[in-house]
Length: 346
Image (cartoon, rainbow, N blue to C red; front, side):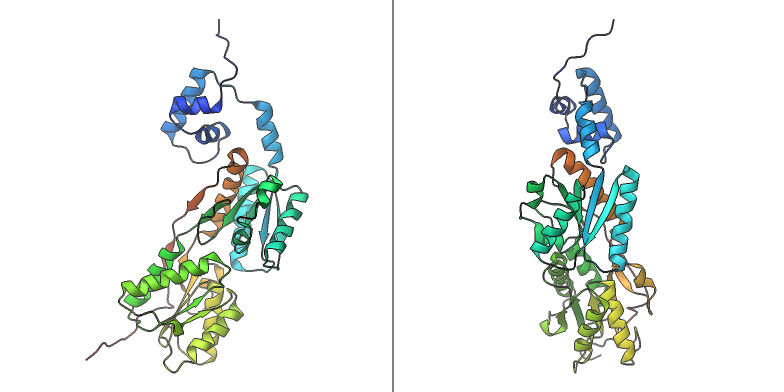
């Protein structure tokens, strides 16, 4: 005769017996998150030992509620946004979720709030954000008010109330700066992003770190703030290239910026990389299509968007806000080359 399983055993009790968190138990039960084989076995053993029976009705309700996710993005077509959309769609399809996107050109908190409310009114139970919308809405209390979960893709730092998936932007730009310095460049310019984007400050800090590590002095005259788009990159590039003592290399905070700068350099008759080295950031499709192909920091944007969907679903179940830092890669192509620099007495 089979013993009658006790009622009232909680998921927390299962976690205590297995030596893991309630969140981990939830992940095992729902097949979510990353759980090692040994941990999964311990949880399943605790479930069997305690006779835990999941609340099927509650699970059905949670799954029914999380049938639609939304994305708020700047309403313009860029390779970066294309990668975000592809990753989010791939994850949504894998989970059997509906996915809707809300373009918003107004980069203010009010505009961002209106876009999120529109998604929630359309049925979204979770919201994905790209910069600067995450930074604008962090601390607003909007998601708690609406009872939805949110995750941000490619922020510059962790946020206290929104799950984030990002790379270490400071370390990434420091690595790029070190690479350019090793190629022989001593006068290095930098095109930074807008201040409202948290990645802008992190990448500028990384640039300064890389200069210091190479024994080079930071010169604010060689740093220009710009939008991330090609036209802004071209305009910023003109300022740097018109200097009497122009830089031999310019590091850009996005591939689109770099593409605009390269176009401007060609217009001025400069040979790349002999007369000017240029680097990008993201490794979107444009990075390998311009000439010369860009040396870049590759951040796995599509995978980051996929991970953000997983974070939203986890937050809907547990309300846990997680900061996930993914690996970046320095991809070396033809846009840097070697620079002949002769030190004192050379």
